[in-house]
Amino acid sequence: MAQVPITMPPRLLPAVDIGTRESALCTIANVGTALATLREVRKNVRGDHKRRLDDVAVILKVIALEAQATFAITDEEALAFIRECRRDRPASGAR
Image (cartoon, rainbow, N blue to C red; front, side):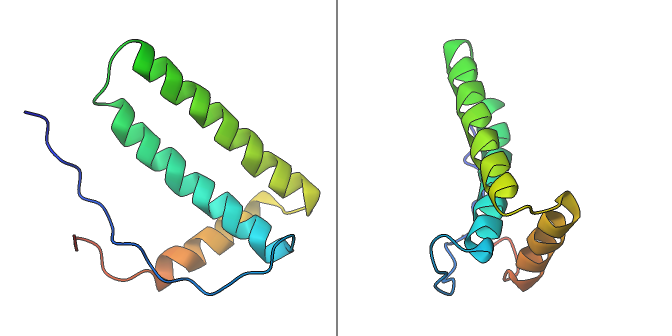
């Protein structure tokens, strides 16, 4: 039987205005989290399911690149925002 992955409980996040630089940074961070999850799921599937997950990953990457280009966000700025988000995250291991 396949092992159930440990997931983080949802966090309550502050509201972010739509169409702002901050919302674009949040989008980029969320895409990074989704891609990491897809990589974990991909390890446990075969064949056509892997190809479908790869297609989803490509779409997510395009979304992140568009958000980054729209607000002229540098890679360094995006990575710093992601590090800041992870630092504010509660301790892992909770279910």
